[in-house]
Image 1: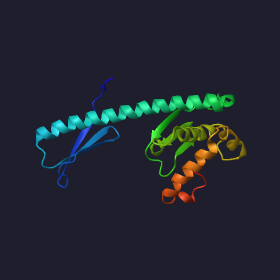
Image 2: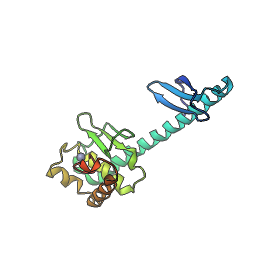
Image 3: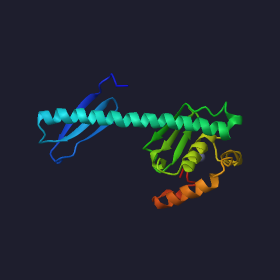
Image 4: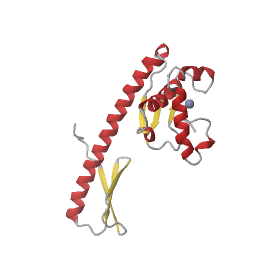
Amino acid sequence: MARVRKPVVEVRRSQRRRRTVSAYRDGERVVVLIPDRFSRAEETEWVERMLARLAAREERLQHTDAELLLRARRLTMRYLADYADLVVPQSVRWVTNQNGRWGSCTPDDATIRISHRIQEMPDWVIDYVLLHELAHLVVPSHNTRFWELVNRFPKAERARGYLEGVSAVFAGAASGEHAVHP
Ligand SMILES: [Zn+2]
């Protein structure tokens, strides 16, 4: 469905910019960066184009978040069914600001964030990260009981190995305790 509410647009002209146009959301506003030499007509055309592009991108993200939540429910029923009354996340979202973490969970408000960096990884790795965070809704810390829950996932060990391998590539990640929250 089309968005009814039109965002407030702030156009910024840049003399350094030659041909590239970019746009990003800043709270309620959308900032569109255009080359200084653009005419008013070009500005209007590009603002429309960038707003459409941004809306499409956000719709895709929302769609993916919905899929992520469904996936979380499936994993919960499959591996944590005996804790289904505890594993009720308020939100499960893809995020781009995890700063080296694959996923994180805030048990206080039952929110889970999964790094967009794992989107291209195999399904069983995504499932592992998601299940790991879901298990934190039952046990917040990394104690024996927590690992018993996570290890119900048949490929848990393999997924940890996969993520550690990827982590080693990122600078600083080696200092982490384990791959999901380095
Ligand atoms: Zn953890």
